[in-house]
Length: 224
Image (cartoon, rainbow, N blue to C red; front, side, top):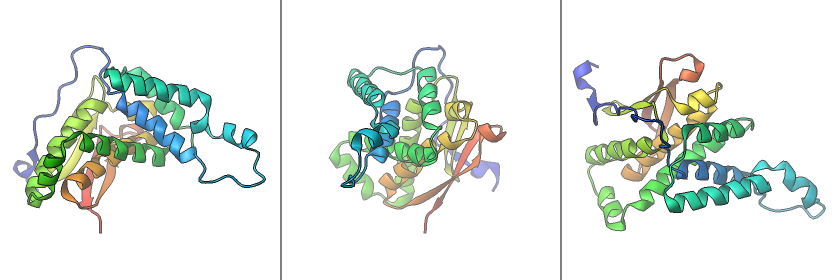
C-alpha cells in the first residue's frame, strides 16, 4: 500500500518533557486485580488445607492485597505512577507461567474501564455509527488510552488504515526481555476496538523491542 494511503489519527505523540510520574494508577491496579482473580479458586476441595494452598497463590497473598488497596486509594486520588514502579510490578508478574494471559486480560480490563467512564448516551451513539466512523472513534479512544499507560520517554502512534499500533521504547519491553508483558497493549487495543464496533479483532504483535525489533508494533485483523 502506498505511504500516502496510511492514515494517521494524529502525529506520533511526543514524550513527556520531564521525569514526573506519568502512568495512570489504574494500570498497576488492574494488573494486580487480574492476577488475584486468576489465583482465586472457584471452589475448595473438601480435604484441601486452605492454610497451605492459599500462600502458593501469589495473587491472594497479603502483600498483593496491601498493594491493591494502595493502588485503589491512588486511583481515587488520581495519583500518577512512575515508570520504575510499574516496571517493578511487571517484573513480578512475568515470573509466572501464565504471565501473558494476565497481561492480556489486564489490558482488556483497562479498555473496559475507559469505556465505562464514557456516559451511557455516548456509548449507545457509538454503537449506531457506521463501521468506518466507529473505527475512527475507536482509534482516537485508543490514542487517549495509550497516552495514559505507555510512560515517559515513549513515542507511540495509532493508525487507522491499516489498523496498527506502534510504540517506541516500550516500558513493557524494557521490563520483560521475553516480551510477554506486551500482551497488555494487545489486549487493550483489541478490546477498545470491540467496544466501539461490536466486532471481535485479532491483534498480532508483529515486532517487539524485547526480541530485537526497532519498536513494538501490533497489527489488527477482524477475527472470524
